[in-house]
Structure formats: structure tokens, C-alpha cells
Image (cartoon, rainbow, N blue to C red):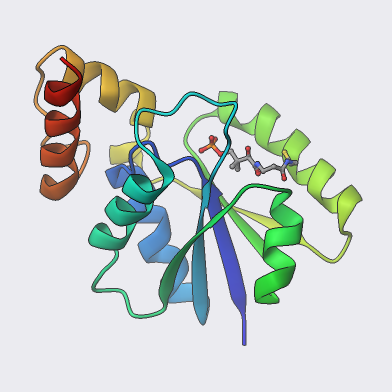
Length: 161
Ligand code: PNS
């Protein structure tokens, strides 16, 4: 069975993330979306909220599973017997950082492979931080995140004042 892990912060999950998950699920038998629980990194949403949003957007894709991790990505992968890390690439500027991470992960566990998937051009400008900025400034989220996520994001920002 070919198992891949798609790791990230997903704060929140965007249409670009969803596109990569959907396409990966068509290539692999099983895709584990690994939501990073990084206490030191300031996230708008809790890990439980981020996992819930990823579950909502992927509910119709049967071979996608959502989990969380806080240590090394390669250790999380071993628990699932996954050998492939999926990374989405939007722009050339993403590449440098991703290249470094891929080499680092390979040095930690040589059996792990990182596969890069080009983001569909219609999502290449979307990032979670841009989505939060647009939401804070009252812009339309229609093209950026799914309706459920847009509502959850607006509620979160309203509750925070
Ligand atoms: O969505 P993000 O924040 O760009 O995702 C970053 C992520 C989660 C892929 C990266 O920070 C990660 O893999 N963290 C786990 C810790 C780890 O394994 N570090 C060594 C490789 S960088």
C-alpha cells in the first residue's frame, strides 16, 4: 500500500491545500494530512479546530485521514509506515525552503522521499496568512477557502473582536 503524508499548519486549510490533497489522493492509496501541533508557532486556530476544518473539506475523499503531530515529521510518518512526503509548490520562492526541508528530512531518514506537486495556477497566490489578512479586512473569501472554512474563520475573528 502506497501511503503519503501531506504535512502543514493548515491555519486554516485553503482551496490550494484542498487541491493538493485531492490530487494526491488520486495517486496514493492513502493520504494522511498531518496537522502540525507547534506550541511555539502562533496559530489563529487550535490544532483541534484546524483538524476539524481539514476533515470537513476532505469528508468526501475516502482515502484521506487527518492526524496531528508535534515532533519530527519523519517520526510521524514511520508510525503510519508512510514513505512519501507531499509538498505543494506555488512559486519559485517556495522552492528554496522546500528544497532545504526535503534534504534535511532525507538526511534524517534516507528512505523518505519528498514529492512536489505544482499547485494549480488558479491557487498559486493563496496562502493561509493571506486568507487571514483578507478575512480581517472584510474581503471576499469565495475563491480562497470553502464555505465552511470561511464561516468558521469569520466566527473566529468576530469572537476575538
Ligand atoms: O504549513 P507549514 O507551516 O509551511 O508547514 C511546515 C511543516 C509542518 C511541513 C514543517 O514545519 C515540518 O515538517 N515540521 C515538523 C518538524 C520537522 O520535522 N522538522 C524537520 C524538517 S523541517
